[in-house]
Length: 285
Image (cartoon, rainbow, N blue to C red; front, side, top):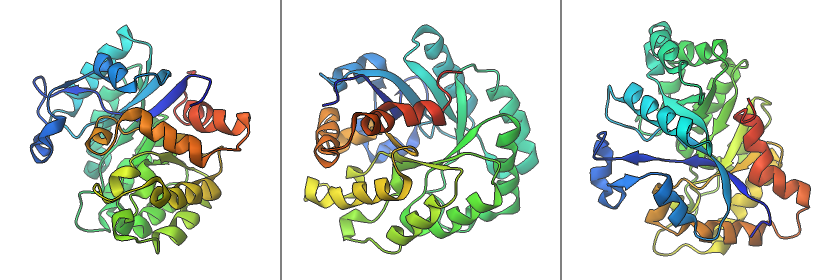
């Protein structure tokens, strides 16, 4: 375990009694109150100094309520160092009203509009969606790119068309680990990493493996490939708590990463577990 406190670049905080998250009906174990006290209990002995909140796909029309709730928590608890909120970027120029409202929140650093649930892999290349993404640069906001591996080709094109926007790939692009797939994700991740305005989160990896048959040995090649593509300067640690609880306890992810990263320098480990997230999400203001 690292001998310094971590920055977790991807956690979900919510209370399903306060806002509605219909998708959780398919994963009822996630329902309930999951805020910082519950997060602290899940961390056990792992020291986490700061976290980045990422939107939780609240039901349509509730994204401003979610952002207001989280920013209120962040004002009381400085460990919530950044917020990645939802915005309906497919509205194109008309999403600016949402961005203006969200920009009132001091903790706002980025936007995520889930792409992974869209059946059409070209959804992210619709003109209005691209226009919405390009608007983020005006407000100094990054875009969390949450896709599945079969959407990678179009995501790469989106990044190419928006060079002025910083992109952060969630969950390493959700490769088909449970099916033993590497290509084309393997090659496409390398292609994405060639674009200088992209970071990658080492999060949600175990979730993409077979929940009943995964081992650290199955996970290792994917983790090593991400590091080889993005380096420590553009790869950051994330837990994907609470979704991660469906497959593994919080400390186990750290243990697996520690084993894979054994032999790395202190500077590399600090970049991975702290510095890259602080840079990408501008955690020092």
